[in-house]
Amino acid sequence: MKSLTHLASTASGNDISAALTEDGAVIVDNLVSEREIDALLTELQPWIDATKTGPDDFSGKRTRRTGGLIARSPLAREFVMNPSVLAACASFLGHVTSFQLHLTQVIAIGRGEPAQPVHRDQWAFDFFPFPKGYEVQCNTIWALTDFTEKNGATRVIPGSNHFEDRMRFAEEDTIPAEMSKGSVLFYSGSVYHGGGANRSDRTRCGLNITYNVSFLRQEENQYLACPIEIARTLPVDLLRLMGYRLGAYALGYVDDLRDPIEVVRPDLKKAGFGDLKNIPSQIKP
Ligand SMILES: O=C(O)CCC(=O)C(=O)O
Ligand SMILES: [Fe+2]
Image 1 (cartoon, rainbow, N blue to C red):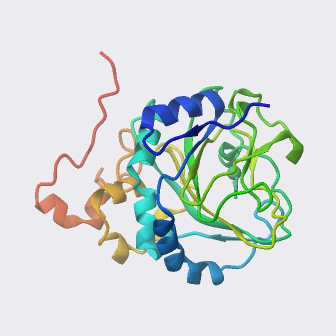
Image 2 (cartoon, protein in one colour; image 1 turned 90 degrees about the vertical axis):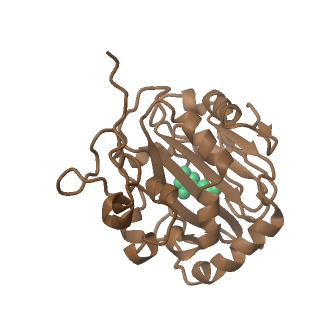
């Protein structure tokens, strides 16, 4: 089987996107420092500790999935907005007018958790059969602890983004995305993968932040997960990414074709903030 490509932290968005197109997955080593991860973990730990384990085998009965990270963790916002990640998304999802934040989730796989069923993340869209090569997601999982085969590193089938849909695989068909704390695995919505079994005595912690094309629904409801009082304090580019924008021409408008950001930040309109409509120039003459 193919191995996973590793890129240096200096890799461009186009480099990451090219590797994703080829293999459906790629690791960027040490994109942030261990210190930055420790600071993030300090902020997240109380929320992780307060999270219940999953209800089924897919979520993981020994796994905690903690979301709502835009509201809960100012440092997680920096990961969401990481420039290398956004450049990779812009390149990999460059065929659409805009992309958006799909979900934010710490995945803490507890000891004794078996491997998650192998799947494609884009099956979340009700198993819609997207044409081969038409990508709708650009996903990241940041290693908050080292990811090892033993502790449940994400398991991937490199190149399976080119496979047929709805295939079934076992753990033996996959390889572990082993990487050091501070590294990040990029993977497409089309690549077959799953969380690994945790056969160690420590929890494996990953920060899953995913992005999708703006004409599809977000998996985590960003409008309700982040209270409007907090949203009002966030930078405009983050709000845009959360979905406070018109996706394509008019998706998500409010009342009289208003850009949703006007509702959150009425002051922007008064200040003459750019062209809030953001009309795309996609229609070729
Ligand atoms: O936790 C992981 O390593 C991956 C989890 C995953 O693929 C999922 O929940 O969709
Ligand atoms: Fe997944």
